[in-house]
Amino acid sequence: MTKRLSEQESYFSMSEFLDSYYWASKDDDLGSLLGSVTLWSDDGELFDQAIAEDWHAFFSDVSNENHTVFESFQAVKQFVNEYLPDIAATTPVSGSLTYNIRIICEMTESQRNQEPVWQNWVAAVNWITNPNVVPVNESPFLKTGQSLPNPKEKGFRQNQFPIAKVLPAPRPEIPMGPSLEKVDLTQSYYAFVKFLQHYYQVSDDSELGNFLQQNRAISENNEEYRYWKGKFLRCSGNKKLLDILKAFLMVRDYFEIEFPDNALHTHPVRKLSCNLWKAAYLPHSQRVQTEVWQNWLTAVHQVME
Image (tube, rainbow, N blue to C red):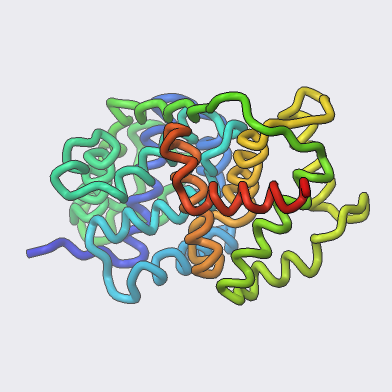
């Protein structure tokens, strides 16, 4: 019989899964996130209701029914896309974990069964669904070896879920290409806007439309432009021009932060975010053949005319 997980069981499995990597690495981003993921009130509610609401959205987006183990893992993917984005600023273990989760979701069953991250996820699920384990109200204030009372069994759980034995494989370096055309700050931002306009025109997506309406202008009053300007200066080393591939990777990073692939965003935005992420990791000879790169190149040439 195929194992099925409730929304709560899936959440607790994710909590233990992430926790196992924190204790194996003491990764700062994981530690900060787990402070919100594992903190419960006396009445059994998460203190951070935003996380609770997001998890419900991610879980329900995959399926409104109880999940298979893989379906719950897909909900975890949406969660880490939101809270541990695959960008350079994310700490190495967290970023690599997100990368591996996303890659595993693209694999066949036989392929993912060989992956240590998947194996650790299955172990977390099995641990949570063991009737002798108490996942509810797990407290960050318990000392190692302590546990909460089991409402179904007498006594206490003696051991925590094991620390991850293998850390996620490091995410690969993003392949760079040959020397390409360069754009200045103004050109790069207008190219970004034109790039988004193309996808808005073909999808009539409300999220893209609202963003463009509010942020298409170059102005210091535009918070998104100020962010873009700061990123441009960091990527260019405070120079006036930036390689269009690096500008493309700025677009990818922007989507990882503002428009990650999860249920908090519209399907056209999610698809674009996913395609940008995939294109970033391709060798440049393959990247230039993707739709997102071709549309980016068109946008760049339009602003350079």
